[in-house]
Amino acid sequence: MATSAATYQSAIELLAKKYGFEVADAKKVLAAKSLLPKKLLVEAKSKPADSPFASKAAAEYAATNSVEIKGLKGTSVKGKLTVKDLKSSQDTTSKQLVSPAAAKYARDLGIDLSSIQKDGKILLADVKALEDDSDSEDEPSFKLTTGAARLVEQYEIVDEDLEAIKGTGKGGAIKVADLAALIKELKAYESDSSDSAA
Image (cartoon, rainbow, N blue to C red; front, side, top):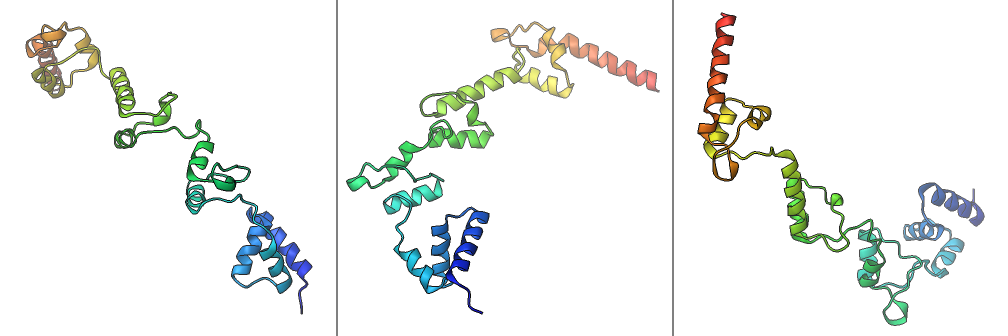
């Protein structure tokens, strides 16, 4: 049973609509696989492409970066699109410019770059400043010497207990000697707890 060109045409239109293709693109794919009747094959070859004239590099850039090239006017000879044209046409609000060093640093530390509000390019210093801000929110307002930090970890001293201690070290840092009274209380509490449990 022979199928008419009109039937093929309507089938192509339905498939193109279902899968989100342009009819001309669907015809080109079918023509490449020799699945079109001769009448439709001639029509597919003779119809000009919908996309503007672009350099090979610009076409590859558009494909890999999901840039829509329809309706764009190129700045090169005879309106030819270049990669520079495509980059300038991209919406800068959806894609922030980031230096490679800043991108790597943020990726390594798990920092979300969308939280940085900046008009220009995001630099490594911007990411480090964001990290410093988040660290200062997480860290307590007191400083510990190395020895005091070990004791805090060993005795599992909580921040609320440390807040009551006035540090006598450089810059108000809490020293081992500053923790002596608190550790004595903790040891007494632990011995009372173990005596009452026995």
